[in-house]
Each structure stands twice: as C-alpha cells, then as structure tokens.
Amino acid sequence: MNSRPNNSKLDHPHHYSSSDPQRIIRLVLGAVMAFTVAIALPFLAPAAIFPGSMFAVDGSAPVVVDGHTVFRVTDTAATASATARAQTISRSLQQFVHEESLPEIGVDVSPTEEGLSTVWLGSPSLEDPQMEFNFTVTPEDTTSSLTTAAQAQEWADKLQETFIKTRQQRQPDYIQQHLWQVPVVPLVAALAHWLAGFIWRKYLYQLLHSAADSESDTGQFTTVNLFLNATLLLLRLGIWIGALLYATNLFPDTRRVSHRIISKLTESFTAETIPIGGNAISMLVIFRLVLLVLLVTVGARIISNTLKRRVLQETGINRGVQEAIAILLRYSLIFIGCIIVLQASGINLSSLTLLASALGVGAGLGLQNIVKDIGSGLILVFERPVQVGEFVQVGEQTGTVERIGARSSEIRTVDQVSIIVPNSHLLENEVVNWSHRNPISRIRIPVGVAYKSNPEQVRDLLLSVGRQHADVLAAPPPMVLFNNFGDSALQFELLVWVSQPSRQFIIKSDLHFALAEALRQHDIEIPFPQRHLHIDWSNMPIQPAPSQNNVG
Image (tube, rainbow, N blue to C red; front, side, top):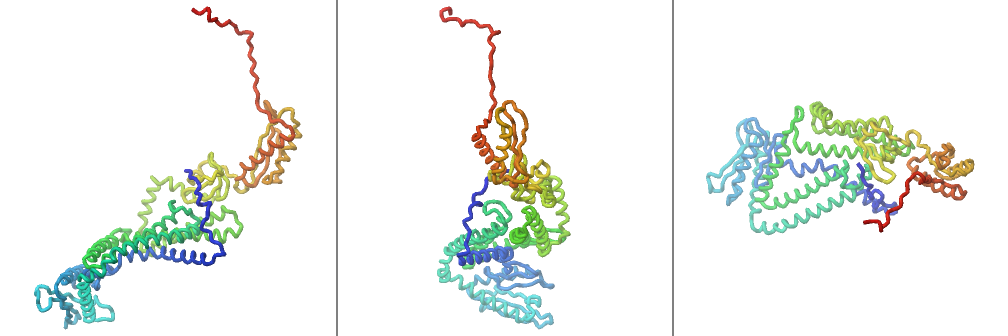
C-alpha cells in the first residue's frame, strides 16, 4: 500500500512565536476549554439528551402534565409499580387541562396508623360530577424531612401552579408573544453548530494532533480523529436537540408531542436489555463506554508521546529504543484504562469470558492474519530487529522506518512516499537493515578504464576522489580493488564507508560526478564495448541482377 506524502506535514501554518504572548494565552485557554468539553461530553450529553426527570429510574417515575414533569412517585408494596402509578396519575390529570375552569385541589389526611394522605381534584361547583380524581401519597413518596401530609400539600401546590401555567400558555396573547422565537432558535443553533466546529478545529484538533504526534489531516482515519469527530458530532447533536426541545417546549401541544417522542427514545436507550454475563446494560452505557475507551486511547497516546519528547529524547538514547518504550507505555495505559472503565461501568470482567472465547475462535478463523500482524508487532517491539529511524530495504523498496504500529509499519522512501507494510512481512520476508546495530556501511563504485591507462595512477586518483567527499569516513579508509581484465577495460572498484545509509544514493551520485571529472582531467579514457563485423564474400555466389529489358 503506497500513499503520497501529505504536503501539509511540510507546512506548519500554526506556529506561534514567543513574542506574541496574548495569542499563546488565547490558544492555551481555548485548547483547555475545548478539551474539557470533550472529556465532559460522555457524561453530560446523555443527561442533556435523555434527562433523568423524564424517565423512570431507581424505583421512581415522573408524573407529567402537558409535557411538564410535576413530581415523581415511587414504588410501593401495596400498589402498582412507580411507572404504572405515574402513567395512571398523568392520564387523569391531563383531562383537567382541557376544562374551562381550574380544578379544585385539596388534601385529605388518613387517620390510620399507616400515615397515608390523599390529593384530590374535582370540577369547581360540581360543574361536571364525573371529573373527580384522587391519588394517595405514601411514606415511600416522601423525603426524610417531610410527612405524607406535607408532601401531599406540596404536590397539590405544584399542581395548582402547573394548571395555571398551562392555561396561560394556551391564550392567544402568549402564543403571539413567543411565536417569534420559533425562527430565531434554528438561527442560534446554526451559529452554535458553526462555532463548535470552529473551536474544535481551531484549538482541539491542533492540540490533540500535536500532543498525540498524529496526522493533522482530519479526513484520515485515526483514533484521535475518531474521538474528535465523535465528540464534535455529539456536541452538535446536543445543540440541535436542545434547540428543538426549547422550541417545542414553548407551546403546550408541541411540548406534549416532544415529551412523548423523547420518552420513547429514552426508554429505548436506557432500558437494560443487553445481557453481559449476569448483568444487563443499556445502549446508553455502551455509548458512554465507547467514548470513554476512545478517551483512554487518546490520553495514553498523549502521555506516551509527551514522555518520549520531554524525557526520553533528553536521555540521548537512540530513536528505536524511545519508540519501543513509548509503545509499551501506551499499550499498558490503554489496557489498564479499559479495565478501570469497564469496572466503573459495572461490568464484571469475568462475564467477558464468553466474548473472549468468541474472539479467540474468530482469530483462529477469519482474523488470523490480523492477529498474526499484531503478534509480529509485539515481537518487533521487544526483539527490535527493525526499529524506528533505521534505513531498510523490503523487497524492491528502500526507505526509513517512520512508525511501528500494532498491525502495520510505515516506511518512508527516499522519494517521500509512505509504504504501509504489515508487521508479519517484516519477520517472514528478507529485510536488509542498513542501520541495524551499526549504521556504518560500505558503498561499491565500479570503474572501467582503457587498457593503455596506468593502474597505479588510476588507483591513486580513485582514492583521492573518495577521500575528498565530506560524507566518506576516514576510518575505515577508502580502498581500491583491481577486480579483473575485462573485454575492453581494466575493471577497478572504489570502496568507501559512510555513516548515513539513507544518503548512499546521493553519495554515489556525487562520487560518479567527481570520478568522471577527475578521469577527464587526467586524460584517462573510459572505454565502451566495440564490435567489428567482417563479411567473407569469397564463398558466396554472385549473380548479376536481371535487367529490365529481359523481363517479359
């Protein structure tokens, strides 16, 4: 797999000089704010999109009137569940909303030892004797500081305020006063949508890509890009859902419809219907787990690269060892972080045994090549036959190892073309490593001169040219071999040693230019093969060609 180099890597338009402290302060503050939002999104977004006041949780359920959550009721031993109680109370209270007059609301306290209280509602002056309803307040519904009578009175007051508010929101004056907000809300949401993208790409993208030493191309699939795009999508989704909820909550009828839709979505995402071992989790938990795992991966990458840049590079150890330490630290942090995330989410690791067995079967069948590449990557990290920064030749391709990843490695050729090589190929196939253990290597340059040339003069001339090049090592010194008497030339070979294998092609070219010039100055001819063709006509019959007059 070959890919052309990204020119954006060669250009750095976002460099800030120390002479502009205000700009640096703005960059740091913006990056901190954006990164804080990215970390908080996995926890805040589910609560904003699926607010806890709108669905049943921890044995309690909301009582809703005209789309407004008024209070919450709990499970009781003598009656139905909290959800059934809340639905029954909500349906009955909704009938009073459409009445012409406000209902009368009162509280009755039971004289029994159970301490029950009742909230009752009825039509004023018995306008409609059928419109009567009451519900019981149990000790389970109260807080530790309130009695059932006080809790019932508090709920009665909230109901009174809710009915007054719903009646006011159905008046034409209220609708006219708030109708202008309907077209304004999408414009504000669109502005917030653009602003979120601007902050993400202006600050957070640059910060994380710089800290994680990752490609700055936002279209390339990397863990950092996946995390950034996922959090940006989540933030924008929250912006538009919030705008939609705000617009629909302005009026009772739209608020009731939106509450019904959100309630259905909430039940779907928060229902613990996915079994894992002996427990069941919801889609919301899985969604949070995915984002947290991405956050752990990005954090581990940032920490390992910070250690490599700030600490390991100062120690003076070679680049390959630095990369090996950084990779081991990164994978260790990811492993430990994922265990912590799973345990904090209430998932028992022992329940993942079946999943691990299934992955093992998959690895043995369809994923064996990927597992083989990952295992080869670990061998490359520990055994280090090939390290980052070394100059290697794999097949017909020659270049510098830029990265050794979990599944594949990147080799940058002298033409600045990135070659993605599976790790298993580096172990199974022959690899020429010019920099392994000792970067000093020898370059051979064959030279042919005419037979009339003086071999001693040619040897001295070749040695002089070799010593004059700046990249040729003085020790071991250059040497010249008289290899053979060729068909048309005396065959010599100049041997020089260099410490930069990646520059061997440039050094060869420089020596070729210098040798051609030196040989020309000393009138030493570089011969080329010549062939003379001799034709013997003595044994071949020669007949005159027929003349035109004899034809016909």
